[in-house]
Amino acid sequence: MRPTTTLFIPTLNEEDAMRVILPQIDRAWVDQILVVDASTDGTAAYAREQGCEVVVQKELGLRHAFIEGFPHVRGDWVITFSPDGNSPPRAIPLLIEKMKEGFDMVIASRYLPPAKSADDDWMTGFGNWLFTHSINVLHGHAWSRPYTDAMVMYRAYRTKLFYELDLHKEESYAPEKWFGTILGIEPLLSIRAAKRKVRIGEIPEDEPARIGGKRKLQPFRWGGAYMSQVWRELGFWK
Ligand SMILES: Nc1nc2c(ncn2[C@@H]2O[C@H](COP(=O)(O)OP(=O)(O)OP(=O)(O)O)[C@@H](O)[C@H]2O)c(=O)[nH]1
Ligand SMILES: [Mg+2]
Image (cartoon, protein in one colour):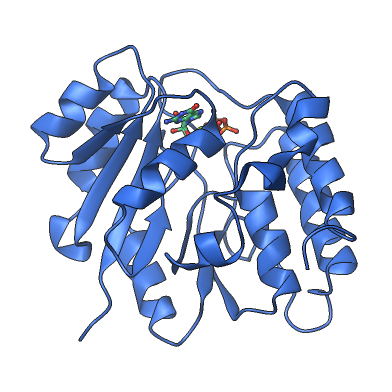
């Protein structure tokens, strides 16, 4: 039987962008579209109207969207997708094709030529470079086929990987407390996938600029907390 795929879309007030992006997604590409929503605008109503499943998030923060949403994922594979315009829908079938080659995770890299990010400023560009290379060097991914983008949300992976890497557990995210923030899951996913030596592939994909809405990224808090995670993982979690 062919593996099934869930498109996983976390949303925090992204109605403007969702109205542009959702119609570009061919429903035949995936088996389930799951929107995990924390919005106060019309995002959830629009997603329902478009036939998506909507889970309303209880605890705010990006990683809680994943922890609360994952039990609703039915696909063997999950594609995590930013609906703000940063994830071009055309890569959905390309990620699935690449997964069929036998990878556990395939990343839509913004930094694998010829891809480019139009959403980066100097700080996110430098930050993403620094984190990606720190993970490659410190977590042993440098010598095989290094990540070119360990930070991006847009990627496909075996749904079970989320649990195998203990990404559903509170203790995995402890450094966020020191910085008074709630993190995303991608850096830790990339670190632990490298530590476990799972099969990781990449395809190049551009990151267009965000459409409408507001940026939620907290560069300093997240930067500090992510860097703490990178170092903490040297000793924590085998
Ligand atoms: N459900 C849910 N979605 C969130 C939350 N925080 C952010 N998101 C969504 O996750 C996606 C990615 O957001 P972020 O990684 O925070 O980045 P961003 O705000 O787009 O910032 P840049 O892309 O760097 O400009 C966007 O669609 C957000 O709406 C949250 O607490 N809950
Ligand atoms: Mg974005």
